Image (cartoon, rainbow, N blue to C red; front, side):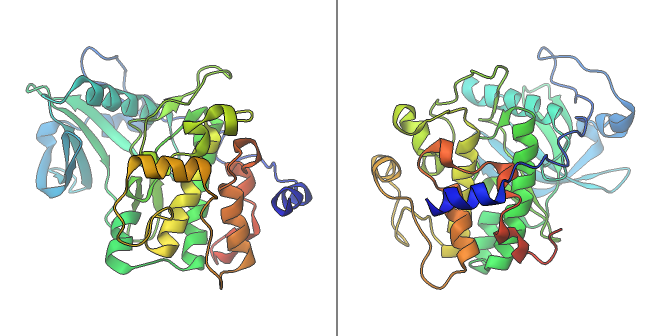
Length: 321
């Protein structure tokens, strides 16, 4: 009840400053997928070809692909090259095409940029992406340890700006977690990995399929009849954000004890039938309230991204406006 009263008192329904920004011109897709012509704002980026890039080293592997750090031969600009191998299964390739479709629609400083897409003769699909030199929030957590409230306020504000932009353009990410949030040396945080995202073409579209990482799924993703309310999918990203911030503060996934191995059935029962995880004693009331607003089990009572952008917790970030 305290959360509901606070939301009514604040009356938070301000427009997103970035929501009226026009998407960047559509990127070229691999042959046979779609066609696109070059626009003035992205002509230089669209001109990047595979032969323009020198591979420096591997940034990571996983899910049928490899990410490389690459340098443009003429400009010396550094990019990340995401390559999905040609022998990958059809599900993974569909996810790649979905990610390309999402990135063609987006233009936000809080979402990782894609500068070009091409298909190699081998069948590999390559995406030239913005390079984030500090890795992900997951790697920072493993390397440097937990984050302070002030740091999390800054991180939360940036993620919420990205989510507000996506939701305003009827895009649901569906896989917000520390490993999908890229960071650079200036502590800019950008949302990445749209392989399981969904574009809501119609207002009545359902979004209860079992995609994404189940540990970060909201209760209505498992049981829409019980927790769905006016379920449209956007609230699921907010639940995942709440778990992400908790993990960065606690140092371990909130539904598990430190060092405990995840089990799908156990996690599903904890999410659906247990109480939402909470913060320990000693945190500020603003932080506790913010997490409670994110982790309301009933999706209709969960705060939206635009509402959370005006939550008092974000004022802990000295760079907040």
